Image 1 (cartoon, helix red, strand yellow):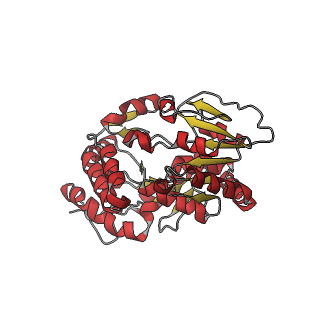
Image 2 (cartoon, rainbow, N blue to C red):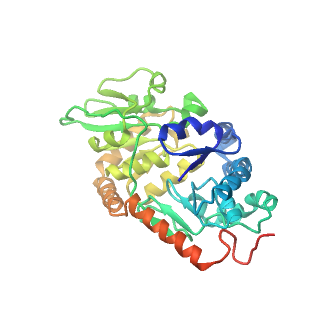
Image 3 (tube, one colour):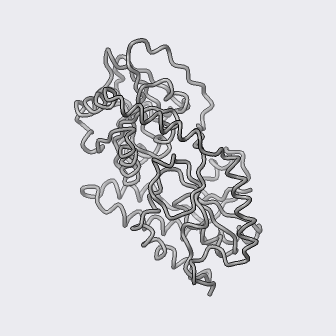
Length: 365
């Protein structure tokens, strides 16, 4: 096995301890998301995201195809926005499998209709027909009742939370106070420090009846501002160790934070801003395990955040639904079991002796 990454992720790949290869060139995704955030009214996210996907595909596909073919890989597993993966797999004649990290936003019919055109220029250069962006199967860490409908073959997998930080987190007994975690991911402060609302949220909700745990990175701690009483700051601690010790979490709506909270069985108040955060958060609310307030509405309105948190905590149905999702998540197959399924899939596709990775009726040019 080898992990293929663009140059800027070389350090992260090396720190994982896995074999890796650097392919393609870097794309300034941060700049693209700054443009999305700054768009008037937050509109235009869809076309901008598709342009970013196209740029990422252009940057990696040809080098990745060389790696997959030269290394004689049997399978390409790619994240849901890394469409260089299915192109490289089609060029090598091996199956491609998506690996989701949240709800299947790009599996929606609207996105499915646009993606082939985004991939077409690179596929043409490699002499391919129309490439199937979704491969032969999808590894899915979402509980089924949280996932959006998808036309892909679903390989459910238990979500296993992890953290790059090895620090153990032990919180003091909560006593009679409710304890609420506040965390804001690692993306928004890279776009604009003013979008990191964790400190503002803590000041809105901390009080004699509510203890707050601010789970942030060491680099984010200076962004918090004045920390109110009844608040504990946990820097570089593992979120999956913090959340089981809390009654709820307030967060930004990122997929990893949502699924970590789902695994912990805690209800969530989500304040999303980016397009994918908005849609991940909406799905969680539809599933009954949380509430949503758009970040643009919540920012500067502490009373609104406090009011919605009270509603989340006072309605026992949200906590009950969160526990049900956690139980459903635990029942999904382990990653090791899914690896066995992938091995069988590779064997089955090879035995079928048919072109892999191309749309039905399409063929290499």
